[in-house]
Image (cartoon, rainbow, N blue to C red; front, side):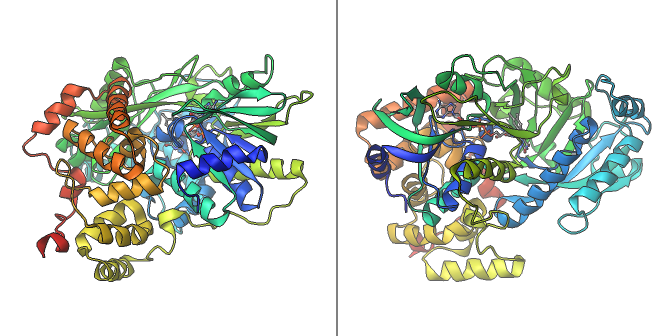
Length: 594
Ligand SMILES: Cc1cc2nc3c(=O)[nH]c(=O)nc-3n(C[C@H](O)[C@H](O)[C@H](O)COP(=O)(O)OP(=O)(O)OC[C@H]3O[C@@H](n4cnc5c(N)ncnc54)[C@H](O)[C@@H]3O)c2cc1C
């Protein structure tokens, strides 16, 4: 096991040398580090913020082949992505599940001319796609995805069936196509679970968040522990640069004028708490091309509606956030599909943005930039370790990308692969019940062992999968007292996450180990109360607790559109009931009743 942060930092200080230093703890850095550590390679992972806090926390939460990428002729990528999607459905069933996806269409023939132009090497402007071109795309998609096995095949229907299924759609939309992809409920957690699994399987492996890589000095990496500012030096044989949209900046810390590799584009999403929109969507994702021809998505995610996204070239990934004009753009796109549904500004409970680390490109339209991934060695410099950069990549393909990068590193180290991750179950997806009956028995057995009701165990299971078995034993010992300000969460539950899952700051806990902030559940009282729980779990001083609250409040206001006034207002909300809680049963606790 990895021990506490203090113990991990001590191990880092004592290390001096390491075979591989992976810089960047997004999904691709974690995946590469996991691959290497599982082969017995001495590997250290450093992330300057929290794990999974960059682009990896900002996806549309689709685990997909990328139907749209077929328009760009990226068939190999689509095939690989669909293979990885199917693997994730099996390896992480606690988080990745099939997503029925509805494409509403206005006519039959649009898009055919553009498709032919593209096929002939042209670059037509994006525009609407008609039923015939979508039918062609979905037939190929089914073929690649093994539809019929992992997920059902696509279907087409006419106006009457479309109206019956989604009455609130714009009447101008006359056809519908339904196909299946997948979605992920807690992407940030999956990355952290991979770290926890790897630490257990390969105890020498070391992963530290809140530690930045600041460059090389005489071949040694200079690292900074962000809480105290302490400098630590480490001599790696190989450096893997997995800093996503920051890759060029990181390479600039290592080499003079390195060739630029990245051309990032910003994408933003809104989380909307609106009953009419939630009801209109039901269990479907609506996947549609807006007036500009840009593909937009919306679906119910953890009880709220997730809608996005934008695709805007940016010079730097620093400080990006969902700006007001982007929010307007997303809302306008939603109105195109559901013109009768009014969304009030206070119903936007959270917003988030990230930068896609796309390969540098001169494509005229951002949507046409390749979503594929590749690895590039920096030209070697005397006295400096070799540096491998991970360029591009989708969330869905992290395993394949990590495997590819690790194989290049293994070759360089003269070592062989001994373990494959293709069928490796992740975190709370291990020993996952195979069907509803098995799940019911699993939950009842667990509840009987510990002093929680089956309902409470079920809520925890939805959040943490089978990891809940370890958590519940602990909760049972400590007592399952709910937060006064947010009863859907327990004090012991949050304390367990803080102590066991590398949470270094208050923001780590409310933004990434849980979805409390994203779901719009956070109030000012909850911030105070959770900070108290975390301070007790991690032994923070009063000064540190207050500083953490201040840092979280600024971050929520600056990057997620959640100001202090909103949080205060949520304190007063009489009917404040957790969306998740209302979707399940009230969490009655045996211990409290006895
Ligand atoms: C709006 C949007 C929607 C998307 N939707 C989807 C989707 O639905 N499905 C899908 O498959 N993909 C999607 N993607 C793509 C996917 O999210 C990204 O490709 C993927 O998360 C990139 O992961 P990464 O690890 O390469 O980069 P990141 O997650 O950005 O990780 C890089 C990390 O490096 C760290 N770092 C930087 N500099 C340093 C340093 N000096 N020292 C230490 N650490 C450092 C950063 O803090 C960051 O955490 C989407 C992306 C965006 C932005």
